Image (cartoon, rainbow, N blue to C red; front, side, top):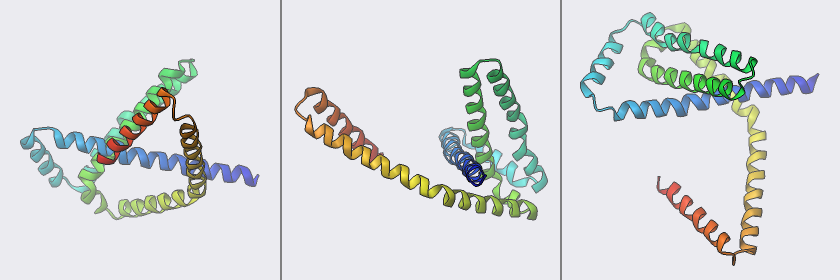
Length: 186
């Protein structure tokens, strides 16, 4: 029973961290997309409109995407239940990523209004505590995975060095170095 409980909490923490990752990266993508849209007057009007909103109305705007996009997850489950595995998984992933991204984007835009409500501020602090708990719970497993990946990289590097005379291996090493240089410059 103890193993099952431990597995349950680990799974819950991992799901929470995946949601947090989606929030951060998809939300960041939407912020970047918003930033490159060349409609400065429209964006300024939108920002002014959001600033004028009372906190309860800001909460309604914050919750609307959840209400609109959550039914897509039900559709995904229906697709899975009717043996449309690929479509079900794709629909679920789209709904999850898009909901997290939109919510993150709106939270950034409405942060001050939302956090001005005491109950929302307490909820926000609780979510931050859960985030720290999830990171702490997953940390040992993450460290083991990273250590295994480092060992695997070393093993691959040794194998590549042992067969370094092959034209294919030389091209593979050159490609790896090119990717590494580009990722460092980005």
